[in-house]
Length: 409
Image 1 (cartoon, one colour):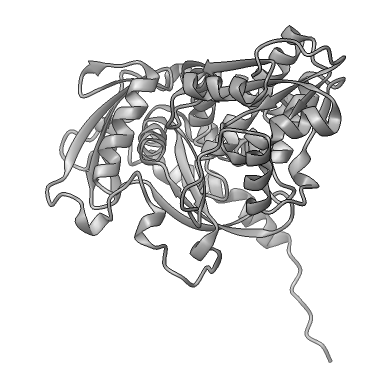
Image 2 (tube, one colour):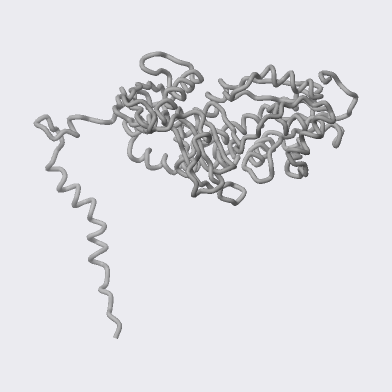
């Protein structure tokens, strides 16, 4: 079944995970909309065998199936710019899922062009953010492509889907359904639904997979020395690593110490509040380390302005505007600024926390002679008096010019 043309006149590229929903969608797009279906499975560091998913797509009826390991591209072209912005949506979420969606959309558009497809499709529901991210990104890259989102109009329950699949000999494995909806890639894992929908309920232990409970983490802290070159992490404890391997190492080590657990009620783009559980050990560690190195190497004015840019970059990513001109401009701003962000950061992992324990850089703006209070102090204390007078002069002028406020009556 699958793997050859069926004579239909039009093709669609379906973002395919191999789960029940997208497996059923292969047949639905053929039967209900008369499309030849090309599936695209994108590996971003999530579990599973890409080749097995590809085979399943063909067995399900796809005329062609592609499986792309995009981990390196994801790390270099999406995670790194996000790290440069220290991106945390609403101050907490490192945007793992949100970062992956524009890359999936880009690869879908490229696949559509290769296969002569007139449309792309996804399995997102009408309540989430991902539908927005995928569709806005795809429209930015190729406005002429039709976008199909069957799950927005889906009328079938899970039981209906299983029945539909069995009637058409679609290979699906039915197991005990988890109460959670989970998405993961190398930058983080998200978990929602089930008992987590009540924000008063403490997350059950089975909501977490990547991290130990901090109370059960080792009693002895571990120290990791992370080296950055122009804002990009390049080694851990003196060992040079590629980005993907470095992130995997910090995910594992951070998870063992319970680092990276995030429980938040966030504002979704579609206008509702949602309770989400995230696990992002590497992201939390690297953002903390990167921020510390920036504080050592960048001027006060740059740091102040950059903070505003960071908040905007996180918002743009979350809201699906990765390919917007503003986001591109922010990335280029950061690329220039990061030329100074080279050095080492020592991070202590202990009982759920990632604490910066030391920073150093050849580009450090910290001058011990100016900062010290001992006998080696070279700061000109006498200059302070004149500085204070000039700094406060506008307030003095304003105060003299201000008329007394007349009392009523």
